[in-house]
Length: 151
Image 1: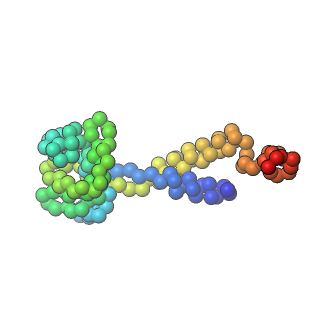
Image 2: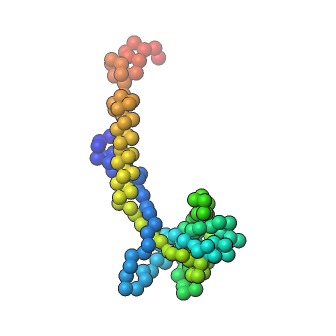
Image 3: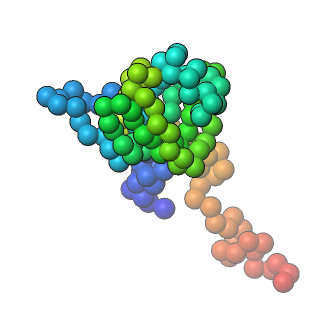
């Protein structure tokens, strides 16, 4: 495997994302259809407990509808106040705007991807040096066991 293909594989395997506030603009950006994370207020967490579970802190998923009254999210995960995440299958949850502390958009992170890729490549280099080279036979004749091995 060439060095270029290793670097390309590392970049593809180590793609990282982060949640950030939507970019400030003259008007609010339309996030409908994009991955978002809705951070709940304490009151919102308590009042939505029957829908999302106890101690829910953030609801993550695809924003399906954005109205003045609520945000409707096709939920992929719910993070509780202990930091644990529960996976969901796209069930829709309407979060009233009064329950929203803030809204974050999921975006590709060049910085995190770079560092994760470098760690991955470093691990590959260490493993390659620890296990001795590119692999293959180590016996004369090019086949494992040498030329006189029984079949």
